[in-house]
Image (cartoon, rainbow, N blue to C red; front, side, top):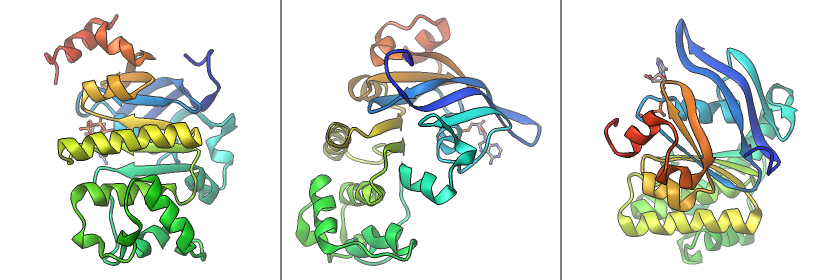
Length: 243
Ligand SMILES: Nc1ncnc2c1ncn2[C@@H]1O[C@H](COP(=O)(O)OP(=O)(O)OP(=O)(O)O)[C@@H](O)[C@H]1O
C-alpha cells in the first residue's frame, strides 16, 4: 500500500523491548498520508506500543521510524508533538471549563487560544459554542470525548493517533465520533492511525488496516481484508476464535 500513497509515517525493521522482553518485533510498513489506517489485533499484540513510537513517547531498540520522510530522532520533540497529535480512550482533563481545557496545549507553550478559534474547534467537533464556559465535569462522556478531540486539534496536527477513543461511549456517541473523525480527515487531510477492538468499525471507517499479533504485523492492506483475510491466524481472529 505504500507504493500508492506517500507515507506519513514509515517503520523500517523496528523492534521495541522492555528489559529483555520483546514487545515489537521487526515492524516494517507505512501509514499513508491523508488516509485512515486502523490497527486491530488481540489484546497485548502491541498496538498501543506501536502508537507511542509514532510520536516519540518511546523509542525503538532497533530500526528506524520516519515521519514525513525525516527520521523521528531528528525532530525537535515539541515540533513532533505538535505535528503528531494523540487522543486516548479517557483523556485527562483539568478541573475547569471547556475553554481552559482547550487552551491547555497552547498555555503549555506560553500562548493563548483565541476565543474565535476555540469556538471554531467546538464547531468542528459538533459541539455548541455555549459549552465553552461550562465545566467539563458537567459534560456527558460523549461531549468530553469530543472536547478531548478538539483539544488534540488545537495544534493542527497533520497526523492523529487514536487509541480506543470510542470504546467507552454509547452507540450514538460512538457514531458521532466516527463521523467526526471522518470529517476531520476529509476537511484537513489529516492522516489518522486508529486503534480499535471493533472490527466492524475498523472495516467501516478505515481505508487501510494493519492486523497485529504477538508484537508483529501479520497482515496489511485495504480494510476490506478483514472480510477475506489471507492469513489463517487473522481469519481465526476475525471469526472471534482468538480474542
Ligand atoms: N510497561 C510495561 N511493562 C511490561 N510490559 C509491558 C508494558 N507495557 C506493555 N507491555 C506489554 O507489551 C505487550 C503489548 O502491549 P500493548 O499495550 O502495546 O498491546 P495492545 O495491543 O495495545 O493491547 P490492548 O488491546 O489490550 O490495549 C503486552 O504483552 C504488554 O503486557
